[in-house]
Image (cartoon, rainbow, N blue to C red):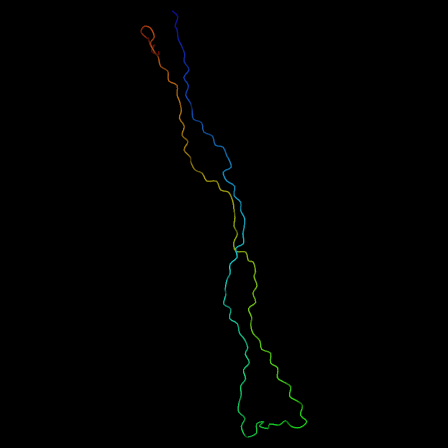
Length: 135
């Protein structure tokens, strides 16, 4: 007795996901100088000439109006007055260090795909179909 048999290979699609590293963004780091005007109140001192006058008494504290004969002429009195003026200087001071680096952040991304699977159907063409039971 000879047995007849037929084979059908059934296939199904599988979802395989790989990761590929691709460039996503380019970043350029640069510094720029921003100017601002600042006003600072600085206290300053100024010397002013003060003339104090006192009346002469009649007792003769130099009440003579004339100079003695043969006296050298009196030199004019010279006084130098001073004032404080603000002197502005600008100095560049480091204020902070900025470090730039790359950090990898892990996350998940959902991938969705439609997969197809082959199905096997048996149709009866002529006569009753017999299905053999496995042993």
